[in-house]
Image (cartoon, rainbow, N blue to C red; front, side, top):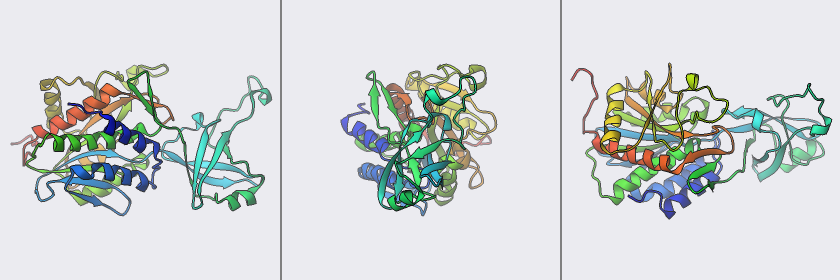
Length: 359
């Protein structure tokens, strides 16, 4: 099963390189839908930009496989008299990595480039250095004053993204910003492709769902689950590789890139559906890891699980290094194995299956 062929990798690169910040996902969704079009029967979209490719739309029983399409970013919050731009978060953007990074400011006149400036080391007092904080990081677009900033087209509310693009490191590591979680949209699209290429006929409707606004509270999933009203939902997102320095495995658990998909345990994860996923992984010899969440998964799983009177939901995660930075890293083998696990699990679900403890 040749999953990551040249066409798939070209799609992944184009999809990752395109900016799709929370609230502004439409460009990425159009790329995703264009790729998915040959493999589905129809599309559903909503007013905030969630996109769903549907196989067997006439079926009453509905299974969702889901990822989210948005990436973290910044908003222009304030422009000083001398033309420097201060920001607020749009999602969980990390202020500590900002200094010296290039940025793209999205305006009605097009992209305006800038940099997060930072005082030179020579000017900082040893032992009393300021650390990057949300209130002291700033963007310099080379403007001499506030009026010039406004003339260029930058104003409060403009969204700001990083321009870092896709690279393959040491043959089998994919590195980019926004792998969280456009990798999810990529992987569910490959599931649809494999079903089509292998002429697999499902006895239920499959809803390949690419939600918006996960990074600000699972909002896209909250909306689209009310539209679809699914019976089962399998969500894919990223989780932390905890093998790198400065992460406490006693708190964060033990998961690592290259060792397989991560299957979650959490109140929102329906136990019988999770066990079906594990049985599938074991029977198909797909390596996997386990992760325990406390109260919530922090992913769209929570939104699907607690909607519509309760939806049997589970989470399959892609282990990732350096989350919410511009050098997020995943292992090629894990990407393939998440795709395989969702593909095989979908085929293991029976029409009308309730995953009820009381059947």
